[in-house]
Length: 62
Image (cartoon, rainbow, N blue to C red; front, side, top):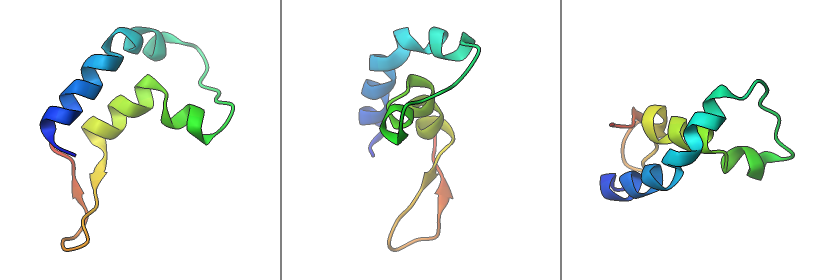
């Protein structure tokens, strides 16, 4: 994903991050709920791994 697209996604979830960070429990109804959680999205975009068919896995850039 391009950095510009990442920035757009982070800006879209920015207002939801404080509540996601401070909640006491993380319980999701299913994998899609986890995948769409603002904190999960932020972690994936900032700490995730890039997978490419032509190169070894690499840490995503900020």
